[in-house]
Structure formats: structure tokens, C-alpha cells
Image (cartoon, rainbow, N blue to C red; front, side, top):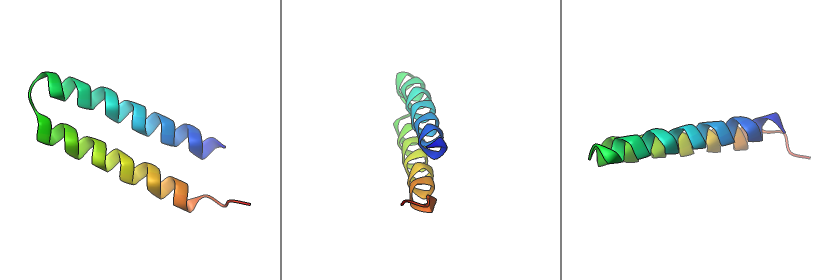
Length: 51
């Protein structure tokens, strides 16, 4: 269950940072940030030992 919390934090932090970047017009950096966060969360999910 702890990994779900990590995934949530990774994705929410990235979304918040991306919104800040979008306000300044930096769409490419915002997209890269979100894509990286998705990959990190996916890696955590795949690495879990599911029953």
C-alpha cells in the first residue's frame, strides 16, 4: 500500500509543478515533467509484489 502513496505524491507534485510551468507558457517542460512522473509511477506499480 505504501507504493500507492508514493505514486500519488509523484503524480500530484508533477501536476502542481506542470500547472506552474503552464502559467509561464513553458508547455514543453510541463509535458516532459508529467511524462517523467507517469513513468516513475508506472515503474513503482510494476515493481510491486501483487498477490
